[in-house]
Structure formats: C-alpha cells, structure tokens
Image (cartoon, rainbow, N blue to C red; front, side):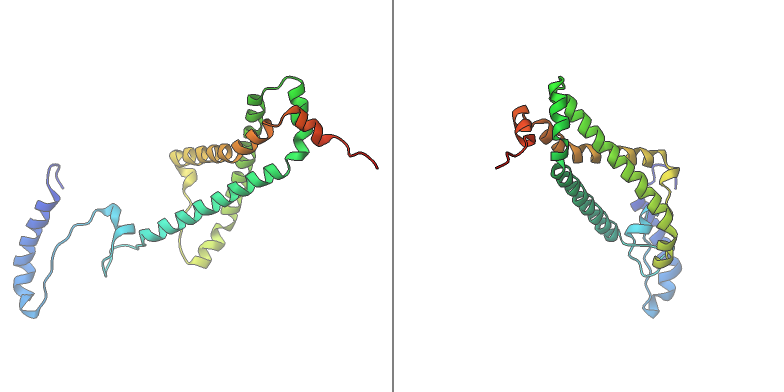
Length: 197
C-alpha cells in the first residue's frame, strides 16, 4: 500500500470491486461478501474470524497468565521478606559489630540490598536452567511449538536484567531498613545470655 492512502478509502474501493465481481452475481443466492482489512500484527492475538489465515490465540490468555505470573512473583517477594526478617536474629551480632566499628546505617542498607540482588540474580540463573531443561517436555504436553527467543533479543535480555535488579531491590529494601535500624543497646540486650536461677 502506498504512503498516504487511507485504510477506509481502500476498503471502500475494494468493496466497490467486490460488489461488482461477487455480490451482483451471487446476491440472488443470499450470499453477500464484505471486504475487511486487518493489520498483520493483529492476526495472532486479536482476530476472531471463523476462518483464519494463520494459527491464532486469544489476548485474554496472555493477560491471564501475565497476572498469574505477577501474583506468583509477589508471593515469592513477600516470602523472601518474611524469611529475611525471620532469620535476622542470626545476624544481630554482625549488625552490632559493624555499627561498633563505625558502619553507618546507609552502609548496612547497601550491604543487605546488594545481598538481596545477588540472591535474586542466582535464583534467576537457576530458573533459566529449569526453563531450558523443561521446555521440551512442556511443548510435548501442551502440543505447542512455543519458542524461547529471549537470548536472541538484546532488548529482552536488558529487560530481564533490569527486572532482576528491581525485584532484588524491592525484596531487600524492607529487611535492610529493619536490620540496619536496630539500636546498639537493643542488639546487646538481645544477645545477653539468660541468667541462671
């Protein structure tokens, strides 16, 4: 199609040709055909014709699985935060010692957030290994030819890397503030041995 041609004008012209070529001859049999143009990029996800040129799916499934993935990711982040806080007592001495030798709260926050990002990155690498290992059995079960092309797209790799960093920061920021906010007297009191009766 030439630049500057409006889709509506093209459709009207095609329908004029269609009326002369098809509808005038077959209209007496109750058959009427209308021409409709559809962008190629909309065929796979947004098309709803009875007969399709290519294999299609429904965009609602994409929205559903995306929402499910975000929900699972949020649960994992909350669990990570809970576990980080649950085991904080094992690091009370470390926090106290670092504060005694002059570490500032900002330094402790950076340390804990960095640890969270590293844990997230290791988890991401492990998840990629699982995905690559289980992709063929998944294709066989679903009887679908789903292709994983994230490693062929620099933009996708950049998005994945940024997602890992952001998830690590969001997951680690609250435990970092919680641990770094402990006062020295509170740390000493928590580590004070119980008196024997």
